Image 1: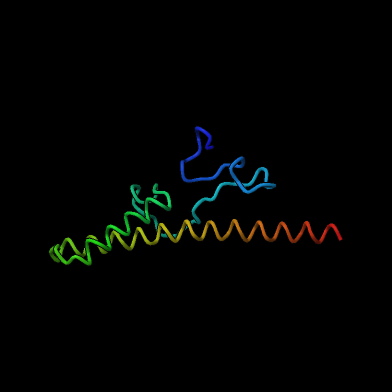
Image 2: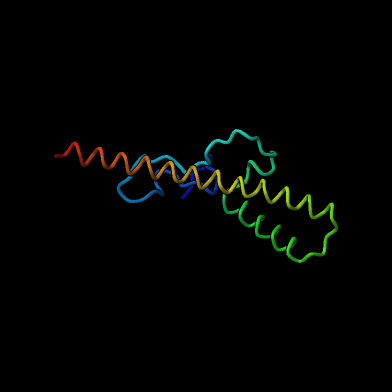
Length: 108
């Protein structure tokens, strides 16, 4: 269940894994290159779905050169957005593992 203020692709603390109260939602990792707003606002799933469609259209070979170049460029940006989400998830997992190790070390 998401909160009214939480984007639909993020897990809120009450949706996280059991025993992990107050965990932060997965968010995309920062990137030094700015993405257009329409791509920067996409969830991982939406960016992935759009990327799949871009690849399908490119593989069909039915567009002209200019259209193909524009699709390729959009695909590159969508792939970067997906990578931002994956990097953010990886950081969160690494933080959770480190916190767990600290807890385990403190109990000894």
